[in-house]
Length: 257
Image (cartoon, rainbow, N blue to C red; front, top):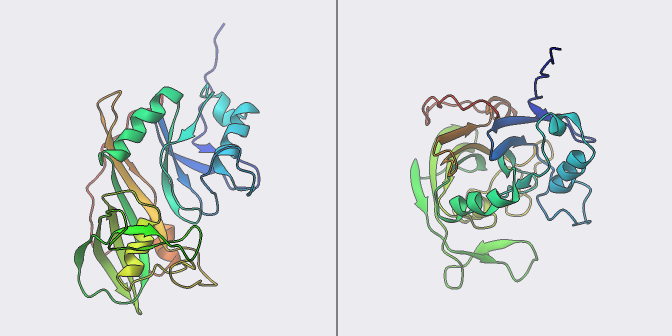
């Protein structure tokens, strides 16, 4: 008797949320296009109803089709995006792979690219920011530039476009400090649009920060992985378009296993 194979959905369905696109998948990892508003905190953290890890695990446990069609029993994020930051977010499909993939971030073997929309006019077209970053003792959860007691942090910036007192910037963090891009840009006098913690809130817009690319060599398959998140809607919302092509055509990713 013939058995029909049902195609795996290319998105995750969670309650009270538009379907979340799956950008990439292989046997070890799965990457999604994280929407803004979801927090990345431990599964048992009860201070928010927008706990992405808890929602994903609940969906897997319930046997929702996107997970059941993949035989998923486990999915765990291996790096963080701020709650209001959208874009590429990587998950591990097994507990054993969590530490292996996490080490790539710790060892600077992950190439991360973001788009940021800032208020102000950068004086340079490209620069490397090396301001040390530390906790702000005046406000819990907030970071600050701390040149004496802070932790080393490096971010490469490149201006892609300028429009009406704002700039579109490509940001490549070389380290992974909390709020690093936001703090560095604010420290350069260029707060991200919509960043109420380090700049000012914009009523009509969300946070002007999106993770658009993640490149690494999968330690299990030894294959180069190049994951992209769509940019067009983000740019359109903030009134920009790309004038400089900064990345090459990605390799064809392996088919989901």
